[in-house]
Image 1 (tube, helix red, strand yellow):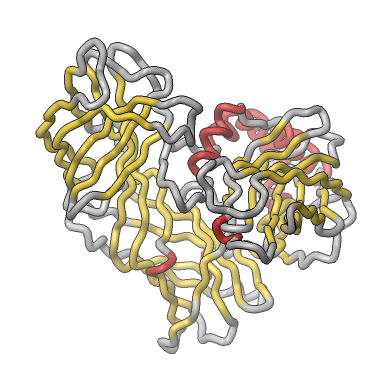
Image 2 (cartoon, helix red, strand yellow):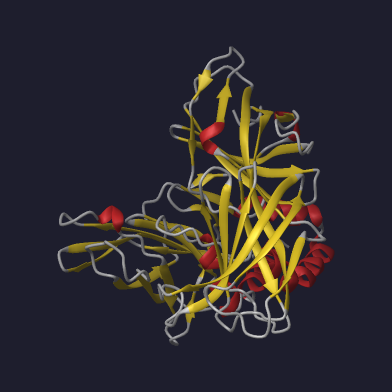
Length: 459
């Protein structure tokens, strides 16, 4: 029965593939490019996973039962440092050894590739002695299949001179493909080549990797004590639930879910610069940020060391929250039949989202001539506003001419002033234009506490 379940899961997972439009939009959101602050619309990949595989999961539950399903998932899940969580079985593919490609005095090394039923994880780094390679962030990544089709990222991100990126699972029977990494910003100061193409071949034989077991955290080992946010505008209860952990050679990796009572808090993440841990004796225990690929409302924390008195108490002093209300706050203005660059309108209106007040001063037609995102210049609206709260907004503006905005960028001004630019590559809206707050990025301070200790049976 377990083999039947694994085959069903593998087949269902491999049948799920996001559209090109979806993966393009998602990658723009999750890529980490320090020189830019562009934030397009937030779309969770869970939507397409759930939509396509919900019926299959229901059938699996009926056939083998929920306990068997969960047990099979737990038995397959493993952890590889530098790669993350994988579903390890006889079909899991590995890169036998690192692949190095050299060009113009620089080396591009594909350190690891692991392909399981859910995803393909690629980890690479750049090296070289000439120039500052820390200016090199390869923000364009894809894998090219033998039939010429490409796969774009579904998770992960690029760092200066390195990356760890998740792609959708490989088609059945495919063990060879190419990894393409490019720098899409033509103004980049990176001295290294702007494009790399590396051919890789995978096999079921596992190389000399440290593959660690994943332990399901039992409820008895996890408790939460919530406190009220220091913000006067909200009183949202938040719970941190550790669902699994990995015992590392130098500590523990804890992962779990964040549950907020306010449903407008669509995605909550921990500000790792403001989280600390204490053991039962009051000793401060070091924590480290991890590079695990996370879904919405998930967290991962590395506890450094193992010599501490149990239980461990973790304090979260700040969180970054993406909020979106069911009825978005908005403002309107008459842009006329043909809005021109430099034209502006006084708005003078206060709107509010989750208790955060934003004063909309005016709006102006602007032009993006950088050609970073599109080969031609693009017109858009610059919304000038002020807020006493630390907030970053994403707007969706539409008028008589519907034109989905491709990206937003927020720029701070003096004091509480800021500007949000909303661009429209398919033509700027005209007539009576309504701009809605699509999402807001806010910070919430407080002292949320939760405790953890290893399972008794795991020690």
